[in-house]
Image (cartoon, rainbow, N blue to C red; front, side, top):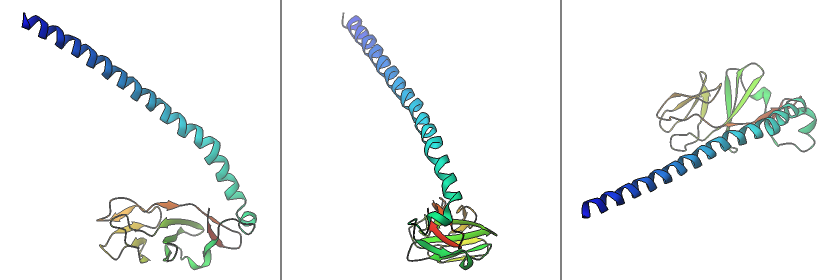
Length: 162
């Protein structure tokens, strides 16, 4: 008689486990459905409108109390960039009039990059190199790009964190 009882227990346990697994999958599905809704709701409401005013008002909003100027456009060479050691930032100008800003902290082991040359942002510690256009790794050992920072360029040529 122990065989039928063990079989019945296994059946009940298996059914219970299946029910729990189904519930867990449903919960994961619900979270998965909610996650895309949140970014979608955030993107059109916050990102799009704020991006347009920042672009259209850098000259008037910056002097009136916007971010502190970190560099001048004239100091950032076309095809190169400038390392701002105190701020731990790198400002680049991949093409004329197009400015980008990245963290100067190497994603490999946290050293500060020290120069921008030949289209790359270079780390002296282990030789990692990052593209001036998008911060992507062009030479390891780093495997992650430099994080980008949002900036605005005022009509006076001042570059500020957004």
